[in-house]
Amino acid sequence: MRTGATLRPHQRGAQKLLAQYGDRLLYVRYRYDEQRKTRLKTVELIVEKQPWEPQRARKVGDQLVAIQVAVSEMDIRNQVKRAGGVWNPQRRVWELRYDQVISLGLTHRIVPTEGRLLNVETHWLLYGETCFYP
Image (cartoon, rainbow, N blue to C red):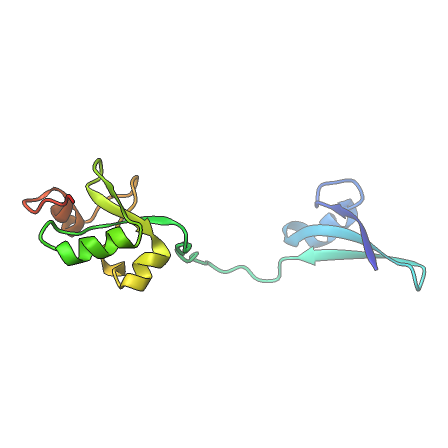
């Protein structure tokens, strides 16, 4: 069975079904069954509507994330450097691939990305008395 035309509710060919189903109508499709030599007209309807909150986007393994490491944490800094971490002097954070951060067990040190508001604790760690640089 193959699909022919797919129509939106206000397109020509879907008007009668729009009158019948109203706002619940999403699509009208014409399907062709070559074995039975028939054309089928199908509809896609909304049958339930509920509020929904999307999940936060997950980080991908090769995505760069910023992590915080204090000056006095030489062993952690060396681990980050060996794993391919790069110092970002503008943000005063280390940037490292997310999969490497997971393997080092440093997910609790991830800093929010630019463009997002920093929480008070992160702001203090970045701009307070403790200074983060290599």
